[in-house]
Length: 81
Image 1: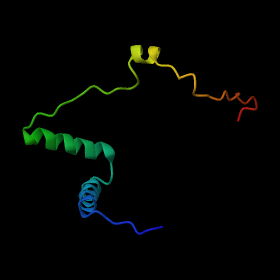
Image 2: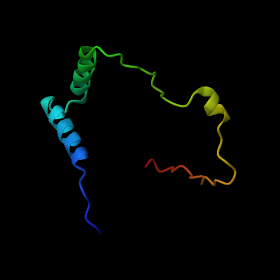
Image 3: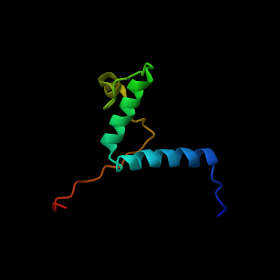
Image 4: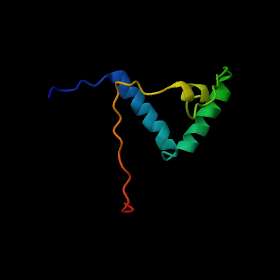
């Protein structure tokens, strides 16, 4: 295998992200709260979009596997495993 070059910009972004996460002991909820506070303090408008938990009902109802895709039918095990 060849050697992998490290992009200095990516390395810097990862170092800043890691330092920020370390300030909160890598607690995702605390990191998220801090980012939200920084957004509010910036005074800029932050766009929020509703989260998609799954496909919309109409899309779910109309999408089907193409006939040329073979989906194997796997039998369920009866031994409780």
